[in-house]
Length: 247
Image 1 (cartoon, rainbow, N blue to C red):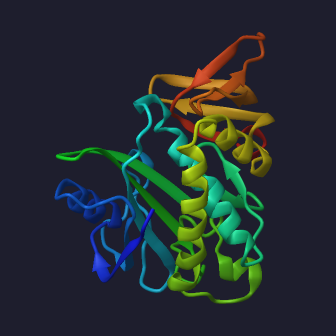
Image 2 (spheres, rainbow, N blue to C red):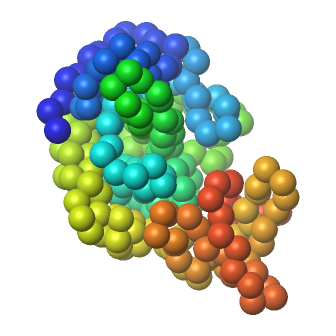
């Protein structure tokens, strides 16, 4: 994969810009980076706080040649890439299924993967938001989020984080697209996530709540949750919370 990096002072959303360019024929490897977002978003339409000089706001266009059912594994692959990137800066993160990275239980990174229909076929736009500093956190997230500066005591720029991030994305994306890619991707994710098994969790779904203990992943990256009655629920999408963190 060859990278083309476009940098902007301000965008509404790096994912929206990347999606628009994908529809206009952008090739795989286009990366959009903004110093500030005015309409940054996370999963389920949530707002992603995107103040200037406070985070890496990054989106990449991918055009996977795999079957559509494996596309959810792109989020897992990205989590692995971000995890190894952070480690280069002295930050050991835990990947919470499916799209968050935590340090000491606080969110340091969020990932949002979205599919886009284009004249060249299906594209996947992957947005990555990494907190560089906690100085501008609003009160509502100050107790649940953290940043590279808060963890390490050092301030890094978005460009410093983006360089190894693109390198790791290339490496793990090539693995995912290989013959044994899905299994290897899940194995890589398992080694970096304490959420793979044995975590008491509550999963909020669109149509209800599931409580139980994590019990591995399906081949497509779906979460397995073993409920108190011994049955296993397969979670394709939902918000995961540790039960011990719930008041």
